Image 1 (tube, helix red, strand yellow):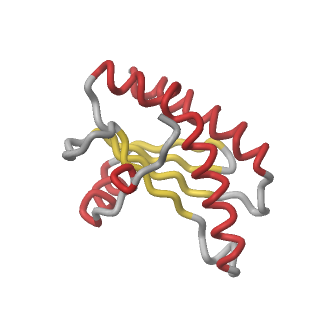
Image 2: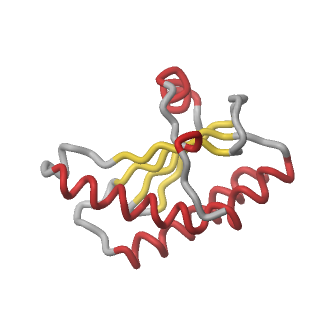
Length: 127
């Protein structure tokens, strides 16, 4: 339940291109969320990619820290706020979570904003 397996990561270049060209997006500072309904094969209803810009955070350790914090917050809250709704509707989505903040966010802030954006995303999906 509280896992984040390889099958949940979005690695397919074609799906990533389609997501950024045809997907819907919204801002929930410090994250930019892009998502798209799709039909990929797999056990999980969501495939997700996390990104932190090299231009803003030139040190890899900073980028990795931010990605680790966002992945952890996502891992903890995805089931109750996203997976349950998608499984009930038998829908599958691809998702991109881009970090657009200017400074390194604390884990508490990342967790709070992740909760907010997952609720906002589930509201958008149910429309």
